[in-house]
Image 1 (tube, rainbow, N blue to C red):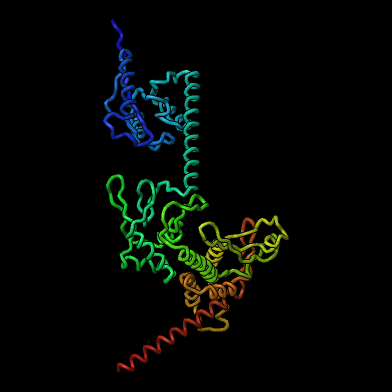
Image 2: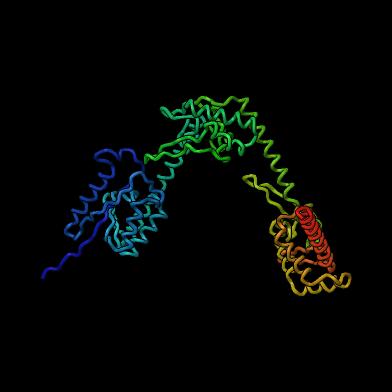
Length: 461
Protein backbone atom coordinates (compact mmCIF):
# COMPACT_ATOMS: atom_id res chain seq x y z
CA UNK A 1 0.00 0.00 0.00
CA UNK A 2 1.55 3.35 -1.09
CA UNK A 3 2.14 6.02 1.56
CA UNK A 4 0.22 9.32 1.05
CA UNK A 5 2.38 12.48 0.96
CA UNK A 6 1.08 15.08 3.46
CA UNK A 7 -0.08 18.36 1.92
CA UNK A 8 1.79 21.58 2.73
CA UNK A 9 -0.13 24.84 2.47
CA UNK A 10 2.29 27.49 1.17
CA UNK A 11 1.80 31.26 1.61
CA UNK A 12 3.84 33.61 -0.59
CA UNK A 13 4.90 36.92 0.97
CA UNK A 14 6.25 39.79 -1.17
CA UNK A 15 7.42 43.30 -0.26
CA UNK A 16 8.79 46.45 -1.91
CA UNK A 17 10.03 49.45 0.06
CA UNK A 18 8.70 52.13 -2.28
CA UNK A 19 5.54 52.53 -4.36
CA UNK A 20 7.57 53.43 -7.45
CA UNK A 21 6.69 51.18 -10.39
CA UNK A 22 3.83 49.38 -8.63
CA UNK A 23 1.36 50.70 -11.21
CA UNK A 24 3.22 48.86 -14.01
CA UNK A 25 1.56 45.83 -15.58
CA UNK A 26 4.37 43.56 -14.30
CA UNK A 27 6.10 44.99 -11.23
CA UNK A 28 8.63 43.89 -8.62
CA UNK A 29 5.98 42.19 -6.48
CA UNK A 30 4.81 40.17 -9.50
CA UNK A 31 8.40 39.09 -10.21
CA UNK A 32 8.90 37.97 -6.59
CA UNK A 33 5.61 36.04 -6.60
CA UNK A 34 6.40 34.36 -9.93
CA UNK A 35 9.75 33.07 -8.59
CA UNK A 36 8.04 31.77 -5.44
CA UNK A 37 5.27 30.08 -7.46
CA UNK A 38 7.88 28.27 -9.59
CA UNK A 39 9.67 27.05 -6.47
CA UNK A 40 6.42 25.74 -4.94
CA UNK A 41 5.60 23.95 -8.22
CA UNK A 42 9.03 22.27 -8.12
CA UNK A 43 8.15 20.86 -4.70
CA UNK A 44 4.79 19.47 -5.78
CA UNK A 45 6.03 15.90 -5.23
CA UNK A 46 6.55 16.84 -1.54
CA UNK A 47 2.88 17.82 -1.27
CA UNK A 48 3.44 21.58 -1.56
CA UNK A 49 0.62 23.72 -2.98
CA UNK A 50 0.07 27.47 -3.16
CA UNK A 51 -2.68 29.15 -1.12
CA UNK A 52 -4.90 31.54 -3.13
CA UNK A 53 -4.46 34.47 -0.68
CA UNK A 54 -1.81 37.03 -1.68
CA UNK A 55 0.29 38.71 0.99
CA UNK A 56 1.77 41.75 -0.78
CA UNK A 57 3.20 44.84 0.96
CA UNK A 58 3.92 47.48 -1.66
CA UNK A 59 5.51 50.69 -0.37
CA UNK A 60 6.43 49.40 3.12
CA UNK A 61 9.85 49.32 4.76
CA UNK A 62 11.36 46.08 6.05
CA UNK A 63 12.74 47.94 9.07
CA UNK A 64 9.65 47.30 11.18
CA UNK A 65 6.62 44.98 11.36
CA UNK A 66 3.96 47.65 10.83
CA UNK A 67 2.76 46.23 7.50
CA UNK A 68 -0.84 45.21 6.69
CA UNK A 69 -0.06 42.07 4.64
CA UNK A 70 2.54 40.88 7.18
CA UNK A 71 0.03 41.32 10.02
CA UNK A 72 -2.55 39.33 8.03
CA UNK A 73 0.06 36.61 7.39
CA UNK A 74 0.85 36.39 11.10
CA UNK A 75 -2.85 36.20 11.99
CA UNK A 76 -3.37 33.34 9.51
CA UNK A 77 -0.34 31.50 10.96
CA UNK A 78 -1.82 31.84 14.46
CA UNK A 79 -5.14 30.51 13.09
CA UNK A 80 -3.37 27.40 11.75
CA UNK A 81 -4.05 28.14 8.07
CA UNK A 82 -0.42 28.01 6.84
CA UNK A 83 2.31 25.32 6.86
CA UNK A 84 5.11 27.08 4.94
CA UNK A 85 6.01 30.74 4.29
CA UNK A 86 7.80 31.32 0.98
CA UNK A 87 9.71 34.53 0.10
CA UNK A 88 12.03 35.56 -2.71
CA UNK A 89 14.78 36.76 -0.32
CA UNK A 90 15.11 36.85 3.46
CA UNK A 91 15.12 40.65 3.58
CA UNK A 92 11.68 40.75 1.92
CA UNK A 93 10.25 39.43 5.19
CA UNK A 94 12.37 41.67 7.45
CA UNK A 95 15.57 43.71 7.46
CA UNK A 96 15.65 43.79 11.27
CA UNK A 97 17.43 41.01 13.13
CA UNK A 98 15.26 41.55 16.23
CA UNK A 99 11.99 41.49 14.25
CA UNK A 100 13.07 38.42 12.31
CA UNK A 101 13.85 36.58 15.55
CA UNK A 102 10.26 37.27 16.67
CA UNK A 103 8.89 35.94 13.37
CA UNK A 104 11.02 32.76 13.59
CA UNK A 105 9.73 32.21 17.15
CA UNK A 106 6.18 32.57 15.82
CA UNK A 107 6.90 30.09 13.01
CA UNK A 108 8.40 27.58 15.47
CA UNK A 109 5.49 27.96 17.89
CA UNK A 110 2.98 27.06 15.17
CA UNK A 111 5.23 24.52 13.38
CA UNK A 112 5.49 26.64 10.23
CA UNK A 113 8.57 26.23 8.01
CA UNK A 114 10.23 29.13 6.20
CA UNK A 115 11.81 29.13 2.72
CA UNK A 116 13.77 31.73 0.77
CA UNK A 117 13.88 30.65 -2.88
CA UNK A 118 17.20 32.40 -3.65
CA UNK A 119 19.03 31.52 -0.39
CA UNK A 120 19.11 27.85 0.53
CA UNK A 121 19.11 27.05 4.26
CA UNK A 122 17.21 24.89 6.72
CA UNK A 123 15.93 26.66 9.86
CA UNK A 124 15.58 23.38 11.73
CA UNK A 125 19.40 22.96 12.07
CA UNK A 126 21.86 25.09 14.09
CA UNK A 127 23.98 25.70 10.95
CA UNK A 128 20.89 26.81 9.05
CA UNK A 129 19.98 29.27 11.81
CA UNK A 130 23.54 30.62 11.85
CA UNK A 131 23.38 31.15 8.07
CA UNK A 132 20.04 32.93 8.47
CA UNK A 133 21.37 35.22 11.22
CA UNK A 134 24.40 36.15 9.10
CA UNK A 135 22.15 37.01 6.15
CA UNK A 136 19.90 39.09 8.40
CA UNK A 137 22.85 40.90 9.98
CA UNK A 138 24.01 41.99 6.53
CA UNK A 139 20.44 43.02 5.60
CA UNK A 140 20.13 45.16 8.77
CA UNK A 141 23.61 46.63 8.22
CA UNK A 142 22.67 47.52 4.64
CA UNK A 143 19.45 49.21 5.82
CA UNK A 144 21.31 51.27 8.42
CA UNK A 145 23.99 52.33 5.92
CA UNK A 146 21.30 53.37 3.42
CA UNK A 147 19.58 55.33 6.21
CA UNK A 148 22.81 57.15 7.06
CA UNK A 149 23.39 57.99 3.40
CA UNK A 150 19.88 59.39 3.07
CA UNK A 151 20.27 61.52 6.23
CA UNK A 152 23.65 62.81 5.07
CA UNK A 153 22.26 63.66 1.64
CA UNK A 154 19.27 65.41 3.22
CA UNK A 155 21.52 67.52 5.47
CA UNK A 156 23.86 68.41 2.58
CA UNK A 157 20.94 69.40 0.35
CA UNK A 158 19.41 71.61 3.04
CA UNK A 159 22.76 73.31 3.59
CA UNK A 160 22.57 74.25 -0.08
CA UNK A 161 19.09 75.72 0.54
CA UNK A 162 17.19 73.04 -1.35
CA UNK A 163 13.62 72.06 -0.47
CA UNK A 164 13.74 68.37 0.43
CA UNK A 165 10.04 67.61 0.63
CA UNK A 166 7.61 67.12 3.47
CA UNK A 167 4.44 69.08 4.15
CA UNK A 168 4.36 72.06 1.77
CA UNK A 169 4.09 75.26 3.86
CA UNK A 170 1.15 77.61 3.40
CA UNK A 171 2.05 80.29 0.83
CA UNK A 172 3.97 77.95 -1.47
CA UNK A 173 3.46 75.15 -3.99
CA UNK A 174 6.09 72.69 -5.22
CA UNK A 175 7.09 72.83 -8.90
CA UNK A 176 10.04 70.86 -10.28
CA UNK A 177 11.10 70.10 -6.67
CA UNK A 178 11.32 73.83 -5.88
CA UNK A 179 9.11 76.01 -3.65
CA UNK A 180 7.20 78.57 -5.70
CA UNK A 181 4.98 81.32 -4.23
CA UNK A 182 1.21 80.72 -4.43
CA UNK A 183 -0.17 84.27 -4.72
CA UNK A 184 -3.45 83.96 -2.75
CA UNK A 185 -1.93 81.98 0.11
CA UNK A 186 1.11 84.28 0.23
CA UNK A 187 -1.23 87.25 0.67
CA UNK A 188 -2.78 85.39 3.61
CA UNK A 189 0.69 84.90 5.16
CA UNK A 190 1.40 88.64 4.86
CA UNK A 191 -1.94 89.40 6.57
CA UNK A 192 -1.00 87.05 9.43
CA UNK A 193 2.33 88.82 10.03
CA UNK A 194 0.81 92.33 9.67
CA UNK A 195 -2.08 91.47 12.00
CA UNK A 196 0.32 90.15 14.63
CA UNK A 197 2.21 93.46 14.57
CA UNK A 198 -1.13 95.19 15.27
CA UNK A 199 -2.70 92.86 17.86
CA UNK A 200 0.38 91.11 19.34
CA UNK A 201 -2.02 88.28 20.16
CA UNK A 202 -2.45 85.00 18.22
CA UNK A 203 -5.61 84.39 20.27
CA UNK A 204 -7.22 87.55 18.89
CA UNK A 205 -5.87 86.79 15.42
CA UNK A 206 -7.53 83.37 15.43
CA UNK A 207 -10.89 85.14 15.84
CA UNK A 208 -10.25 87.82 13.20
CA UNK A 209 -8.56 85.91 10.36
CA UNK A 210 -11.59 83.82 9.21
CA UNK A 211 -13.54 87.07 8.74
CA UNK A 212 -10.63 88.28 6.59
CA UNK A 213 -10.83 85.11 4.47
CA UNK A 214 -7.52 83.67 5.73
CA UNK A 215 -7.80 79.91 6.33
CA UNK A 216 -5.34 77.02 6.59
CA UNK A 217 -3.80 75.51 3.46
CA UNK A 218 -5.96 73.02 1.55
CA UNK A 219 -4.27 69.71 0.77
CA UNK A 220 -5.35 66.65 -1.20
CA UNK A 221 -4.23 63.27 0.20
CA UNK A 222 -3.16 60.30 -1.92
CA UNK A 223 -6.67 58.91 -1.45
CA UNK A 224 -8.15 62.05 -3.01
CA UNK A 225 -9.50 63.38 0.31
CA UNK A 226 -9.31 67.19 0.74
CA UNK A 227 -8.15 68.40 4.15
CA UNK A 228 -7.50 71.88 5.53
CA UNK A 229 -9.23 75.08 4.48
CA UNK A 230 -10.26 75.69 8.08
CA UNK A 231 -9.70 78.41 10.68
CA UNK A 232 -6.12 78.57 12.00
CA UNK A 233 -5.79 78.00 15.73
CA UNK A 234 -3.30 79.71 18.05
CA UNK A 235 -0.78 76.85 17.75
CA UNK A 236 -0.88 76.96 13.94
CA UNK A 237 -0.34 80.72 13.94
CA UNK A 238 2.67 80.43 16.23
CA UNK A 239 4.22 77.87 13.83
CA UNK A 240 3.74 80.22 10.89
CA UNK A 241 5.14 83.25 12.75
CA UNK A 242 8.26 81.30 13.77
CA UNK A 243 8.93 79.55 10.43
CA UNK A 244 12.06 80.98 8.71
CA UNK A 245 10.80 79.53 5.41
CA UNK A 246 8.88 82.81 4.96
CA UNK A 247 12.08 84.88 4.90
CA UNK A 248 13.60 82.61 2.26
CA UNK A 249 15.54 80.30 4.57
CA UNK A 250 15.65 76.52 5.17
CA UNK A 251 15.89 75.05 8.67
CA UNK A 252 17.62 71.73 9.41
CA UNK A 253 17.55 70.71 13.09
CA UNK A 254 18.91 73.78 14.93
CA UNK A 255 20.63 75.35 11.91
CA UNK A 256 19.13 77.83 9.43
CA UNK A 257 20.51 78.13 5.87
CA UNK A 258 19.88 80.49 2.97
CA UNK A 259 17.19 78.93 0.78
CA UNK A 260 16.74 78.84 -2.99
CA UNK A 261 13.06 79.78 -2.76
CA UNK A 262 11.70 83.37 -2.75
CA UNK A 263 10.77 85.05 0.55
CA UNK A 264 7.21 86.17 1.34
CA UNK A 265 8.07 88.31 4.40
CA UNK A 266 10.75 91.02 4.52
CA UNK A 267 13.44 90.95 7.22
CA UNK A 268 12.22 94.13 8.92
CA UNK A 269 8.78 92.58 9.54
CA UNK A 270 10.41 89.32 10.69
CA UNK A 271 12.59 91.05 13.30
CA UNK A 272 9.64 93.11 14.62
CA UNK A 273 7.56 89.93 15.03
CA UNK A 274 10.42 88.14 16.81
CA UNK A 275 10.82 91.09 19.21
CA UNK A 276 7.11 91.06 20.10
CA UNK A 277 7.11 87.30 20.64
CA UNK A 278 10.11 87.60 22.96
CA UNK A 279 8.36 90.39 24.88
CA UNK A 280 5.17 88.29 25.16
CA UNK A 281 7.19 85.37 26.58
CA UNK A 282 8.71 87.62 29.27
CA UNK A 283 5.29 89.09 30.15
CA UNK A 284 3.67 85.65 30.34
CA UNK A 285 6.42 84.53 32.68
CA UNK A 286 5.87 87.53 34.94
CA UNK A 287 2.10 86.97 35.01
CA UNK A 288 2.60 83.28 35.79
CA UNK A 289 4.87 84.12 38.69
CA UNK A 290 2.28 86.59 40.07
CA UNK A 291 -0.48 84.00 39.80
CA UNK A 292 1.55 81.29 41.50
CA UNK A 293 2.17 82.88 44.92
CA UNK A 294 3.99 80.57 47.35
CA UNK A 295 1.21 80.23 49.96
CA UNK A 296 3.33 78.04 52.29
CA UNK A 297 6.19 80.54 52.43
CA UNK A 298 7.52 80.86 55.98
CA UNK A 299 5.74 77.71 57.21
CA UNK A 300 7.96 74.94 55.81
CA UNK A 301 11.02 73.74 57.71
CA UNK A 302 13.60 71.19 56.56
CA UNK A 303 13.57 68.29 59.01
CA UNK A 304 17.20 67.46 58.22
CA UNK A 305 18.83 70.90 58.15
CA UNK A 306 16.38 72.71 60.50
CA UNK A 307 16.20 75.66 58.12
CA UNK A 308 13.40 77.11 55.99
CA UNK A 309 12.20 75.79 52.63
CA UNK A 310 12.09 78.78 50.28
CA UNK A 311 10.05 79.16 47.05
CA UNK A 312 11.86 78.46 43.78
CA UNK A 313 10.91 77.63 40.22
CA UNK A 314 12.32 76.38 36.94
CA UNK A 315 11.08 76.62 33.38
CA UNK A 316 11.58 73.36 31.48
CA UNK A 317 11.36 72.49 27.76
CA UNK A 318 8.21 73.93 26.24
CA UNK A 319 8.21 76.95 28.56
CA UNK A 320 6.12 75.35 31.31
CA UNK A 321 6.79 76.68 34.84
CA UNK A 322 7.47 74.19 37.65
CA UNK A 323 7.30 75.49 41.26
CA UNK A 324 9.24 74.05 44.19
CA UNK A 325 10.04 74.66 47.83
CA UNK A 326 13.82 74.26 48.25
CA UNK A 327 15.88 73.65 51.37
CA UNK A 328 17.77 76.90 51.96
CA UNK A 329 20.95 75.11 53.11
CA UNK A 330 20.88 72.89 50.00
CA UNK A 331 20.31 75.91 47.72
CA UNK A 332 23.21 77.83 49.26
CA UNK A 333 25.52 74.80 49.22
CA UNK A 334 25.74 74.61 53.03
CA UNK A 335 24.44 71.02 52.94
CA UNK A 336 24.70 69.66 49.37
CA UNK A 337 23.80 66.16 50.65
CA UNK A 338 20.41 67.18 52.07
CA UNK A 339 17.87 64.45 51.28
CA UNK A 340 14.90 66.83 51.28
CA UNK A 341 16.38 69.19 48.63
CA UNK A 342 13.38 70.20 46.49
CA UNK A 343 9.71 69.36 46.98
CA UNK A 344 6.98 70.02 44.42
CA UNK A 345 5.05 73.14 45.48
CA UNK A 346 1.72 71.97 44.02
CA UNK A 347 2.01 68.52 45.65
CA UNK A 348 2.97 69.98 49.05
CA UNK A 349 0.14 72.55 48.94
CA UNK A 350 -2.37 69.82 48.00
CA UNK A 351 -1.09 67.63 50.86
CA UNK A 352 -1.48 70.43 53.43
CA UNK A 353 -5.01 71.23 52.18
CA UNK A 354 -5.92 67.54 52.54
CA UNK A 355 -4.59 67.55 56.10
CA UNK A 356 -6.59 70.69 56.96
CA UNK A 357 -9.71 69.21 55.36
CA UNK A 358 -9.37 66.22 57.70
CA UNK A 359 -8.95 68.59 60.67
CA UNK A 360 -11.99 70.67 59.69
CA UNK A 361 -14.10 67.51 59.36
CA UNK A 362 -12.89 65.91 62.63
CA UNK A 363 -15.80 65.68 65.15
CA UNK A 364 -13.37 65.82 68.07
CA UNK A 365 -11.74 69.04 66.77
CA UNK A 366 -15.12 70.66 66.07
CA UNK A 367 -16.45 69.87 69.59
CA UNK A 368 -13.21 71.07 71.23
CA UNK A 369 -13.27 74.30 69.20
CA UNK A 370 -16.92 74.92 70.03
CA UNK A 371 -16.31 74.36 73.77
CA UNK A 372 -13.49 76.94 73.75
CA UNK A 373 -15.58 79.42 71.77
CA UNK A 374 -18.63 78.86 74.00
CA UNK A 375 -16.67 80.18 76.99
CA UNK A 376 -16.62 83.63 75.35
CA UNK A 377 -19.86 83.50 73.32
CA UNK A 378 -22.66 81.31 74.68
CA UNK A 379 -24.82 82.04 71.62
CA UNK A 380 -22.41 80.16 69.31
CA UNK A 381 -23.68 76.63 68.57
CA UNK A 382 -21.74 73.51 67.61
CA UNK A 383 -23.57 73.45 64.25
CA UNK A 384 -22.43 76.98 63.47
CA UNK A 385 -18.81 76.02 64.15
CA UNK A 386 -19.10 72.89 61.98
CA UNK A 387 -20.72 74.81 59.10
CA UNK A 388 -18.17 77.63 59.28
CA UNK A 389 -15.18 75.29 59.12
CA UNK A 390 -16.79 72.96 56.57
CA UNK A 391 -17.29 75.81 54.09
CA UNK A 392 -13.56 76.53 53.72
CA UNK A 393 -12.46 73.59 51.54
CA UNK A 394 -15.18 73.92 48.82
CA UNK A 395 -14.32 77.61 48.23
CA UNK A 396 -10.54 77.27 48.71
CA UNK A 397 -9.66 77.55 45.02
CA UNK A 398 -11.80 80.71 44.71
CA UNK A 399 -9.82 82.53 47.41
CA UNK A 400 -6.99 84.89 46.50
CA UNK A 401 -3.50 83.50 47.28
CA UNK A 402 -3.04 86.16 49.98
CA UNK A 403 -6.22 84.99 51.72
CA UNK A 404 -5.17 81.34 51.43
CA UNK A 405 -1.81 82.22 52.96
CA UNK A 406 -3.47 84.17 55.82
CA UNK A 407 -5.70 81.18 56.71
CA UNK A 408 -2.75 78.78 56.60
CA UNK A 409 -0.69 81.05 58.88
CA UNK A 410 -3.67 81.25 61.23
CA UNK A 411 -4.08 77.46 61.36
CA UNK A 412 -0.51 76.14 61.09
CA UNK A 413 2.41 76.70 63.42
CA UNK A 414 4.90 75.02 61.09
CA UNK A 415 5.33 72.09 58.67
CA UNK A 416 8.43 69.93 59.17
CA UNK A 417 9.38 68.31 55.86
CA UNK A 418 11.40 65.10 56.18
CA UNK A 419 12.66 62.81 53.41
CA UNK A 420 9.95 60.17 53.99
CA UNK A 421 7.16 62.06 55.79
CA UNK A 422 5.66 65.46 56.60
CA UNK A 423 4.75 66.62 60.12
CA UNK A 424 2.05 69.33 60.22
CA UNK A 425 1.88 71.24 63.52
CA UNK A 426 -1.57 72.80 63.97
CA UNK A 427 -1.89 75.94 66.16
CA UNK A 428 -3.83 75.22 69.34
CA UNK A 429 -5.90 78.40 69.04
CA UNK A 430 -5.98 78.44 65.23
CA UNK A 431 -9.29 76.62 64.84
CA UNK A 432 -10.91 78.86 67.44
CA UNK A 433 -9.70 82.08 65.80
CA UNK A 434 -10.80 80.91 62.37
CA UNK A 435 -14.19 79.69 63.58
CA UNK A 436 -14.87 83.05 65.30
CA UNK A 437 -13.84 84.96 62.18
CA UNK A 438 -15.97 82.88 59.82
CA UNK A 439 -18.99 83.02 62.13
CA UNK A 440 -18.76 86.82 62.33
CA UNK A 441 -18.56 87.05 58.52
CA UNK A 442 -21.59 84.78 58.18
CA UNK A 443 -23.61 86.90 60.60
CA UNK A 444 -22.63 90.11 58.78
CA UNK A 445 -23.76 88.58 55.48
CA UNK A 446 -27.04 87.47 57.02
CA UNK A 447 -27.53 90.98 58.44
CA UNK A 448 -26.98 92.55 55.02
CA UNK A 449 -29.43 90.11 53.39
CA UNK A 450 -32.08 90.79 56.07
CA UNK A 451 -31.72 94.55 55.62
CA UNK A 452 -32.06 94.21 51.82
CA UNK A 453 -35.22 92.15 52.23
CA UNK A 454 -36.71 94.71 54.64
CA UNK A 455 -35.91 97.57 52.23
CA UNK A 456 -37.50 95.71 49.30
CA UNK A 457 -40.60 94.93 51.40
CA UNK A 458 -40.93 98.61 52.42
CA UNK A 459 -40.60 99.81 48.79
CA UNK A 460 -43.34 97.45 47.60
CA UNK A 461 -45.67 98.07 50.54
